[in-house]
Amino acid sequence: MKIKNAWCTGNNGFPVYDEEVKRYISVRPSERQLAFNRMKYYNFIHFGVNTFTDREWGEGNEDESVFNPAELNTNQWCETLKSTGSKGIILTAKHHDGFCLFDSKYTDHTVMKSPFGKDIVALLSKSCKKYSLKLGLYLSPWDRHEKTYGTDEYNDFFVNQLTELCTSYGDLFCLWFDGACGEGPNGRKQVYDWERYYKTIRKYQPDAVIAITGPDVRWIGNEGGQVRKSEWSVIPWSDKTLDEIAENSQKEENNAPNFIDPYAEDIGSRNKLSGKTDLRWSPAEADVSITHGWFWHDDDYYKDNKGGSSRTPEELAQIYFNTVGGNASMLLNVPPDKRGLISDREIKTLTEFTKIIKKTFAENIPYELTLLTTDGEEVIPGSAGFMLQNNEIGAKLIPTAKFRTLFIEEDIKYSQRVEEFEIFADGKSIYKGTVIGSGKIVRFPKGIEADEICIIITQSRGNPVIKSIKLYK
Image (cartoon, rainbow, N blue to C red; front, side):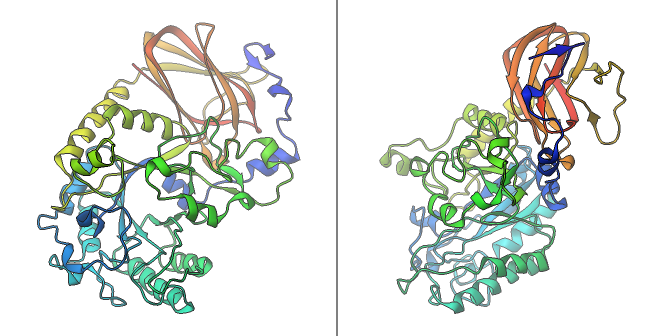
């Protein structure tokens, strides 16, 4: 690395701003994607007949009477999850078994035919408004109950149900599709009319992102909360295939692949993008369950399947640091139990997890920021963030302080630009990283004591635009 006046001039031999770079950084998020990105951490709720049958995938022939959450309380869900810092909830309005948690006029296989007899999506919508949480919905395209599945008529059926969800429960921040495609009751598979589904959502919920099997949010490629060393948001869209998502998502954790093509380790480097004409902004989402399964099971189920019932708070915290701090969002599944409540077992784990996160970001260290351009003149931060030219960001700590966590984020309105950076404390290198994007969390468990730190952008696509830098004790 060649340094002049404490800033990098070489860009690792890559062009800082040529026609290819202009093309890469012209790929930027939509307004709905920016709103989604600001959420960072939110929750999945898997709930349905599987909760009562101790299954992960129902057959579609379950009797509606099996579903009876006598103590169901969506306010308890929202209050519990809001306390963890969650920004929203995505509910499984219909899973693969075809049982609907909403009042659909297109099938009798719904919660309205169960002993509970109330529209749970409506109840949750009301609770989300009360607790200022955003609402998203999962609607499985695979329906093992519906007789028209596997025919052209099923696409009409699915659009009708999708329209019900998009028009009956207020604003939605997300429609979530895993793309699962198996056999229906007639033994046939369905050819999904995705474009028609997308048009329906854009018509009725234009601000909602369409996630996973959709154009707005990308599945990270595993269900264990893992991220890549370099998690890019600008990727070649031609590498994304719906069939692979359908084949590999929503598996039990031990059977889910870690990184599958097109979700290989390198998805957005210059080498990956070179010559590709269809580049799109595709932010990563890491979906992971607090339990080792998507639906709630009692402890005996996990003993029989030789697994633990719940992840530890420390595991969840590490997943949070890796995902929210790795240019991805964290979608944490917290399934209610047979009563219709988040159980004490999960609440205990969530409480301890939340303590770790809050303690990590409790004490913000003040500092004076100095920005140097390539000619050594100071740059005044503007509304666009801190515009740099492959230089250093110098921070003089007030007073000399010991910090354990650094959080830095780019202003992704201007695309994702930083490709490599290095952190120095009192002139000594303490960390080397690659991408930043929506957020990079760098942790030093033993702490770093210093008078000054500097962050040198050693490689970027054009001028980096840094939105914020925060230090925590």
